[in-house]
Amino acid sequence: MKNKVKDIAVVQTWVFLRTWKKGNVTYLQAKHFNDYGDLRESLIPDLKQEEISKKHLLQDWDILFSAKWTRNFATVYRS
Image (cartoon, rainbow, N blue to C red):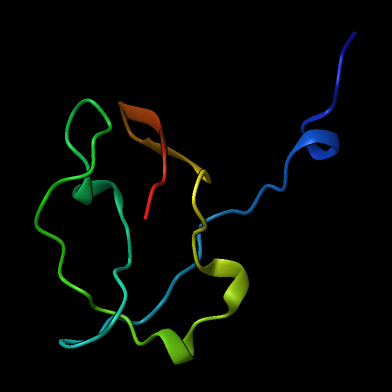
């Protein structure tokens, strides 16, 4: 049996946000992950949560896909 992705998942694409020197949430980008798709330890909060739509905030078990040049990986987000 074949399923369409839209029938089994909610897919959202990249969003551009303006960062700040001091924030309370981190704008995750490919640079925050190592070559194996593992999240680096040192993250600096650079977004103000009140300025972000709730639909753009990650939830536990969300899957992040990164396709940046030859650096492609997927990882599961855990708060």
